[in-house]
Amino acid sequence: MVPSVTLNTGAEIPIVGLGTWRALDGQVTEAVKAAIAAGYRHIDGAFVYNNEHEVGDGIKAMIDQGVVKREELFIVSKLWNTFHVPSLVRGACKKTLSDLKLDYLDLYLMHCPMGAKVWKTAASYQTQNWCKQSKTSSNLVFSLRLQPGEEVFPLDEQGNLIPDDSNFVDTWEAMEALVDDGLVKAIGVSNFNKDQIEAILNQPGLKYKPATNQIESHPYLAQEKLIDYCHSKGITVTAYAAMGSPGRPWVTPEDPSLLEEPMIKSIAEKYNKTPGQVLIRFHVQRNVTIIVKSVNPKRIVQNLQVFDFELSEEEMKMLLSMNKNYRVFPMPWGTKHKDFPLNAEY
Ligand SMILES: NC(=O)c1ccc[n+]([C@@H]2O[C@H](COP(=O)([O-])OP(=O)(O)OC[C@H]3O[C@@H](n4cnc5c(N)ncnc54)[C@H](OP(=O)(O)O)[C@@H]3O)[C@@H](O)[C@H]2O)c1
Image 1 (cartoon, rainbow, N blue to C red):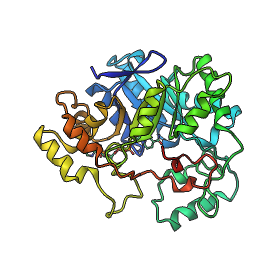
Image 2: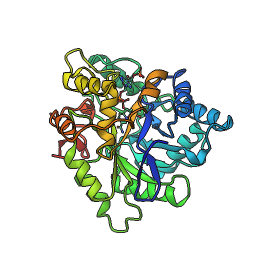
Image 3: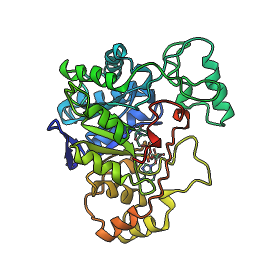
Image 4: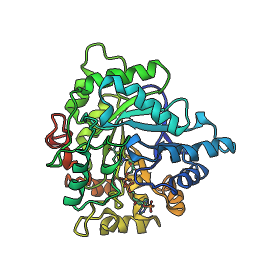
């Protein structure tokens, strides 16, 4: 049994879950099956990962084989930026449900506060040009298409996200209707700063408070203020990129690597654990839910073996002292957007 964190809906979210970003076709179904067999009950996905169909195949196989029941699982997905206009929210959620082969989600997050325009026509080629210019890999989500001519990552010639005319508070209201209609059990946000969360909380007529804010966090980006703020409002926090996302396409050899940090390695040696397990345990002891992506069966099992040791108070302080507000997801394409979340102090 993986310990859980209680959401403000009363539901329990297992504190460690499986991430699925860049878990590629042909690998992710097996990864989901291996994770459920290993005891994972929390799976984190998103429309924009372009693999929800395969994630759903893995979930369905394990339910059909009787390994797990639907109600024992906690399945999370995210509303992508191009579906912020309220009339698009329901369709986006239903597409995710159909790909996952599920009747409901346990948690549906607004992936990001920045709404973006679904952009048709030949302009989509500019996105691919931008990818080339910035030397990013060609199989990035940037080049995903909804339908021929529609981009999920609409960027202008300068590489900036093309905004829609939505307001995330209105998007939130449309997400509330998904709860009322039974399509999702809880709703939350991701990549929101304090002021953006306040804007939702202060909305007259607010029906449901965000259950979770899913944010980047690890020892280089401890996020203490934002986590404390969320917890003070009864909003749980889920950390992504807990390993520092070493598989991100834009990583360079000069980038600092959490998994290679001598301090983390020496703590790991002391407990006969791996650096990855120490990085997971760091969040567990902050009561922060954590999702780690792996398609490697050995690491999938290892990443759940974090409940048989405890970091000392001093070790937690040492890990927190590594904070340098270093982001592996700085979202350079969003800096010009009115709702870019990362300029705020927290
Ligand atoms: N809300 C958002 O905007 C957002 C953004 C990014 C990510 N996410 C979610 O958070 C999840 C996790 O983030 P992430 O995938 O960027 O990064 P991550 O979990 O920090 O790192 C995943 C990478 O680390 C490797 N890995 C996994 N466990 C390991 C271990 N114990 N030791 C060493 N290496 C290990 C994986 O390789 P193998 O697969 O080969 O094991 C993979 O390359 C995503 O998959 C996604 O579900 C959300």
